[in-house]
Image (cartoon, rainbow, N blue to C red):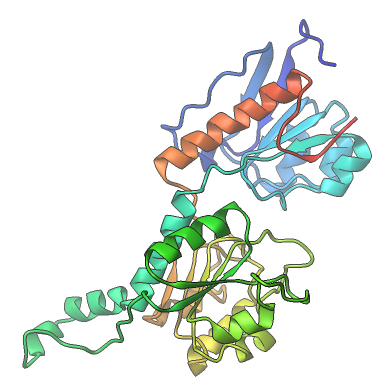
Length: 326
């Protein structure tokens, strides 16, 4: 139970991950808020050492930081993914962890389809060709240098059937696409969920909507690309690490896949020599800077839900619990 007369110290480790115009509502209980614009991994332990509540979007909170933060009772993850927090250490220490859910049900699926449309209709390739003067050299009213494919009638394989996967499915059905919801990798197929490998073989488009866990790391690698008989485009707006990025480069170079649209990388921001940066020379590869979640409305909903999670914990009724403390 929380002592209403004792202000809680709340430390926001990476306020800069939300735009300045995003309103961060003031929690409705006595508190002291310390907001850092950003926190390097080696700064986290010192910054939460005296905190009762920590907020993080992407700043990593590891086992050592959790062990040293003797007053820490609650971590509010200002995101859905919780891979930046050592959940095992939180469980051992009795630290409750909550995350934000269902705030991105419009923005991420719309970004998925923005990438799909751009790749299936070669929009960037045509944009670049026009910029380079190709239209002026055409002997006709148009030129058809790059492939264009309709969505209607194509098969979209959805890996992950949570809220985002289901939202993508609804949009796909509205476009007249055939939806294949894959069973878990290694699991037996079900009547409405074909085997993982069969979905890879049959799909014209593949899109990933699973969290990054030890089980899903490297979900798509060389063996999986070899199964992609229909040369699909691959969309990843979920997490870097789900796809072997070097294998992705090989699949693009060999034509094993028709294109890829990624919003995430194993290292963010990626270094200049990161494997995905080398793929930017391909007209059928699009890399966006982890912004699928970031429509203005979604970010405000994220901030509001983060504060609501903190207030619920303080009131003794924690919600969106990933790890439950004592």
